[in-house]
Image (cartoon, rainbow, N blue to C red; front, top):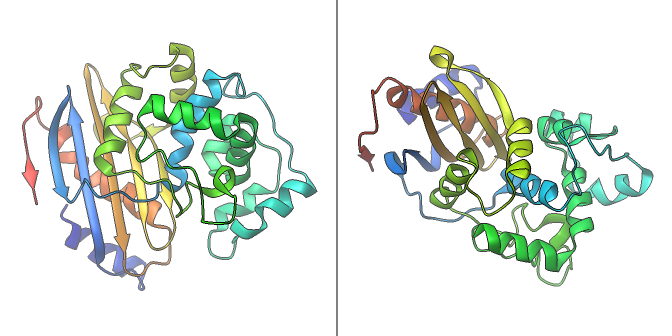
Length: 270
């Protein structure tokens, strides 16, 4: 489904949704780009999609030990640190933040403070080393100038930036378990980003990210011997729901033509 048709439906369901100012969809199969729409080389804040590389790093460094361990406990101190990012009226999912969480529920409910606990345990230098190892975007975790908040929010509309092309290259390696990290770290990460079966019983893995002004959905689908990796980025002009949720639905529609093909075929739409 084309972007205009999709957003027309969204506008009908959500009256304040409107056309996208920025849009990219890129997909790979067997190492080839098989579909590309829009500008996929421009970098943007990764927002909650950063949880995926952070999970790999967390499992690799034994901060995370399984999809269900450790449990981090929601405390008054965490509540204070979370306060600048907490907006449940705008993002109702945040109501789930005020409880204890495991790696699986961290990813499921996209819990900001759990990410912050991992980055604080890693520290600036170890996080830098591992992002360089992943070749992740611009690798800039300095945060906002003068605020010393790199470990708290560099991935939330701040210094860390990544393009859709870089996202799909990272996801391709993770889905194939070929990142320069242990197989167990990658397998545990995959276990906490598996989502659901979609069209024709393809299995969907991925993570949304972003707010009302911009959204991501990155991941892959697989069935039988086929695996298609993708990254979707969108900047809706106005929306009642997060850009990440819009990006997910748009990505699923963009994947249909690829799922119905028998094998990789180069498609470029600009």
